[in-house]
View: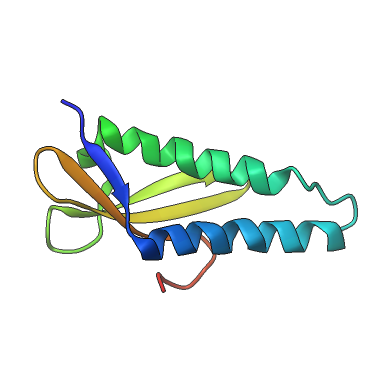
Length: 105
């Protein structure tokens, strides 16, 4: 079974925000890596792609069995995608955040 995965406008804005954060931070770091932002984006997209085949393997984010969180490893930390399994054919990603952020926006 294959699910269609869609990102809400808010999730796309989160993706842009996370990319910009890494892009802005790296030049200021000693030995900063400007390619890190692109690598982070690829890791997030790769993680989200796994939702096409196995969204039910992700941890529950509430009492609902359909609202879940995907942990996306990257470096020493990673990212978290909040998503909902809408039906037996579709998944909607509603938010993305870095694991060290307090909560979804």
